[in-house]
Length: 181
Image (cartoon, rainbow, N blue to C red; front, side):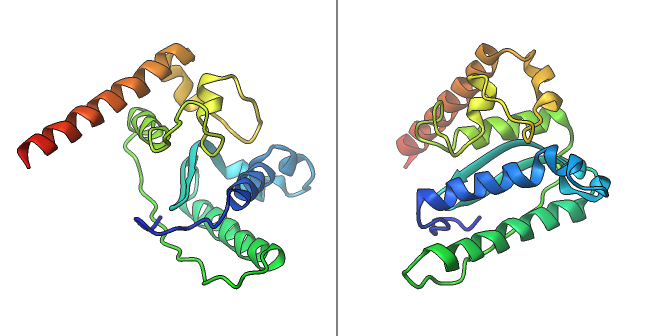
């Protein structure tokens, strides 16, 4: 994700990327394919996502870093094809900056999911993040939260409290920097 540059030109593009994540990571892709064990949905558990105007951030558990790179490449290719098909305005080639970061374990992953959800102004109801899966019982076989859910006892109120604490800490840090400046 490139800082301060627009990655998405419309909300339709963000909705398209979510639909592609659903198609690629759904367990249906395993059932429809005789070689399902090769499908990305067999290699990747999507734990959280955030699609802001500046980019895509995905939090995943994967058995293969290659699978993560394949997913990123597939999403980018499909987004470029979508733009070429549905946009009448010529667009510049998408600036693609990929960064794969290995996390130390589930607690670091939980902290990262919280910070992803805090990226959105309307963090509780933003449809371009996975927050609905955590707080509002949104369902889908393409999201696999069980690796993190046990850390907050699968209680939406506890996860909400973690986000509110994070936002308070950020607000305090921002006001402290303003005072020092």
